[in-house]
Amino acid sequence: MTGATLYVVLVAFGVLVGIASGLLGVGGGTLMVPFLTLVAGLSQHAAEATSLLVILPTAIAGTLALRRRGVGDAGFAIRFGIVGSVGAVLGALLALALPGATLREVFAVFVGLVGLKLIGDGLRPRSRTA
Amino acid sequence: MRASASLPRRVDHSGSGLLRLDRELVAIGVVGGLLSGLLGVGGGIVMVPLLVLWARYGQRDAHAASLGAIIPISIAGIATYGIAGEVKVGPAIALAVGSVFGARLGAGLLARLDERALKSIFGAFLVGVAMLMGVR
Image (cartoon, rainbow over all chains, first blue to last red; front, side):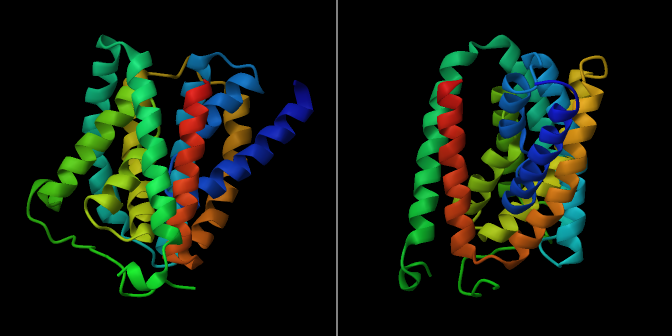
């Protein structure tokens, strides 16, 4: 896909990523990176860099919108994120020293199981959730 | 509709430790960031479940905390990877135009949806991501 069509599709996909980000509190990189490699034809490296750059304004827009609505506490969230960013830098350095594939598969299974637990919790009758 | 007040909900921002966060949150921040950096996944996928299942946050507050936390985390990522030369500016701008608009819609939904619906939707997202990671 090239030219004007690609840009229309990118904006439309961006809207979907933004909705997921604001609703779920995620960056959306897991959605954008495969899309950018498979649909827009970017290399893995370029897709990751591009996605990382899109995440920042998206998270800022979502956080400002939540603040206007009185949801959460933006100052607390950012302090929490500063601690998280220390971990992220350490993790990225560790990733360079470790075999990635196995780690990734184990993590995929773990994420799937946590997802199923949350779906189960969400569907449980209200009387038992308290 | 707003969720009932009976759900687990702990928004305590009065801790006196590092950056005024209690120890549990410092641990979740570091572990969440570590896994995120290690596996190249977004922090939210890691931080939201830890906040909900470990720190007993309500689903809505966990999503809000995670979204705000992504701001410094993504700045650190951009700084660490030094990506200036790799970014495709055109696609980045097109995606961001859509995603900044979408984020406001999503935040509106987060403010309105029931806690239990949020939990199920987030769970379904995790299962989807797990499958996506499996096929890649």
